[in-house]
Image 1 (cartoon, rainbow, N blue to C red):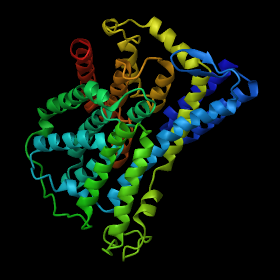
Image 2 (image 1 turned 135 degrees about the vertical axis):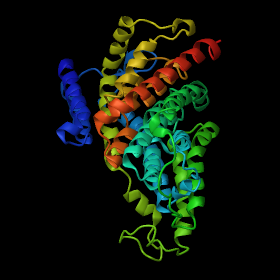
Image 3 (image 1 turned 60 degrees about the vertical axis):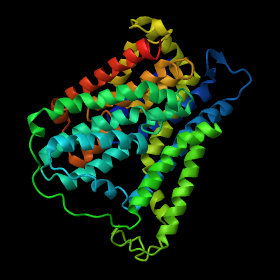
Image 4 (image 1 turned 90 degrees about the vertical axis):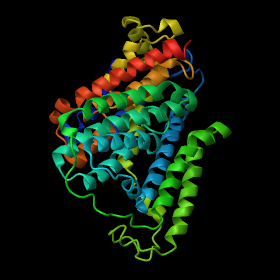
Length: 455
């Protein structure tokens, strides 16, 4: 029966990976796979395990209780993401991101490349790499008219956004998963992964800035678009500040991160309702007929209606499917066999039990296979303690490895859709830069761990 369960998981995984070829949204196989796996466990009465520091069977525990336990852990991530997404949508409702465009003054291509890359790195650490990519490409489309040049900028923005998301507990879904699962703490994550992430962004941008395509000035005018709401700047800074406050709240109260995110959402939503009732004209901000020109339509309700629910359902399906394999002990045994078959690359000096090569393969694999299930699997595979260097390396590798293919990360997929970037164009022009950045950051990480932080 275990063979059947593994087969169901592999088929579901393939359907997720090939969603563009099958023309089926990946949430469908994720939800179907999750339901089938737990149904097979229930119908065949397979023994259910919990993996903490060692593998042990939960005697006398009903399957429903195990399922509820995993659902609770998954719900923490989903509620956290819902809060963050809503805050970002409220900022967008007030046209807050238009404020960022006001900081861009230069027309030099090389300077613009550094500005967009640094903005991508910083923004993705706060509002996540997917949203940061959407914001910056939207601004890019207003600044640069030449599409062929925009494609190059978009490629480097993807690298910068994924690098920026890797070192922040709120910057990438996978890093958030590790944080909520109590595998990494905020301070240690930043301490171990910030410099490698900077190297992952800086090295490709430094190489690209010397290329011919980024020489000279851009043509045309930026335009004089101003934010369409008088409260744009306030809502931008309030929204970003409230998201940054979440790790601080967790550190002070020791409550799960979603509690702090709900508090931040409440504060931002309160200001949004206050400013909305001040009757500035929203007919200019959004031409959507659902908005009242006097601003009486609730910005919170509007923002909630724009939440990307397919992504939330996909996370539910894939996380619960991986939890089924974890409960059967399969991931734990797989990690043991993988660890024994792979060579160690200097991890013994710090007592680390997982090969660096395994984690780097995980990073490269995230360019082909969605990094969310990969990290979800790694959480169930490796029984190492909080803030072990393995978790920090996984956060880096899974967060930045997806940049090597346009379909390897959420940032890449959304950029592909917004700019109609060809898969093979990205593979030829950008992939090698992303690979060099990934390796550069990995080398910096190993040096830091073995000779600086591990000393």
